[in-house]
Image (cartoon, rainbow, N blue to C red; front, side, top):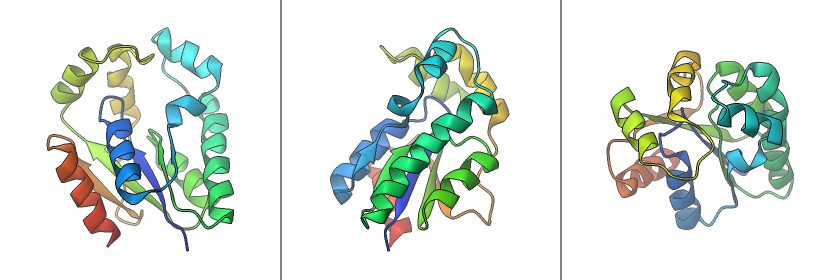
Length: 165
């Protein structure tokens, strides 16, 4: 059976960095969730307007379809997705058996600092607060692991690999 890792968390946690490192280490197909957003979502966020669930559902369905296609080929996958609410994660989990979450967490200060140093990304720092307010952390009955982002990428990769073992 294939495994599908959703590297999740609010903006600035380093989802893409960790997911790329995991994809390189595991050799699994990787999708950058930000690249799967409809252009209207990107424009909205770039304008500093938080997404609502009505904006997110089509995006989540696109991610779920990508994962499902690979699951049908028995390929494990890695995808980045904020997956801020339980309902978002339930939708992704329903798409493919073996879906697990890697929830990246860090202090508001660290995330704001990272966002301030990030160039060329459509997500403005002003949306960090709304994402933190929307976030529903992984619950005990959700398959996944919580990873603190204050460590090195290598340490985070090791923690995820230990979880997968």
